[in-house]
Image (cartoon, rainbow, N blue to C red; front, top):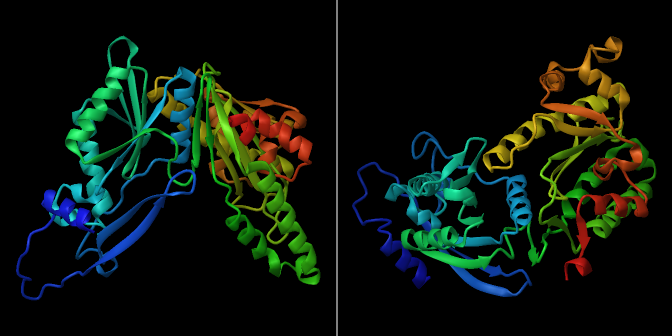
Length: 425
């Protein structure tokens, strides 16, 4: 608590004044948190003096509050690129982040506008230091030097990771950050947010290990308890829940994704779906996965927003979702200096969906499909993406959409770059 008060004083965060007549005061309170390291051991105890921001009124006490945070796909792209070039990934943590706002009255924890004020402050600093902000991911900053030297950083509120191919640029950046802010140099990235529980460096590869999230899946499956089929036989619901949870744990617990040095430059996509898999509303599940540097960097398993009338429609809609993600990933990679070819290949195991992406064939089956899903046809015509047939046995996106036998699941997982804990060690 003493450290927190001292930081508030050093940053000249507030000044004592008289409450204006008719003014409304906003109270403060102490919040305590125990932080753990990657091994589950106590790392430090933190105390924050926060404002009761929930009492603020929009339009009276604040207006704009939006502040971007890094997408997990972006962080995985940075890790994959670092592994490809054989570079280490470093991590910095800004202490008392929200005390650095552009305006003192914005620079208090839990004020609605505090995150936006902090982002504006750190963004201005990066731009002053010669970084360029990615137009398609506003938390990604790139600094280029002479002879191909490069420094890349990704920002998630007060946590940032960065990598570069020049030790001098890395060292100068650390020194500059420590001079500008009160920083904690965490060295090489080992533990980042809750998504990356462990990061292991080996001579030719980097492995990131995530955290298995079971509770959300349990709730999603349990929500089907009102389905007539399960109301008649609740034991079947419990059995299905247990099977899926155990299968998920078998495939993810203590596992990670390898990104290899000198891996493939090319972004490769796989897309697949089930058909009317939800027994309650008969909606289908879309799934896609993108590979870069021999490991998965982006994936999706999500129920479609519409009820499809055919397998062709299901696969076509899924391919359209995948194509949209392809456009974004290609643009980000271009900014990172890993330019992709004009056409990105999307592997699909539906011949009819591939035909429909090229020409308005099968009009009777596709005339009712929402116009937004036909966006993929324009991308195909422009040569941005191309749907290519792959056999069901080689369809990596199957792990995102349907239950599989264990041997098939493990085979496809290995193709995605998934590794076990023993492989990491």
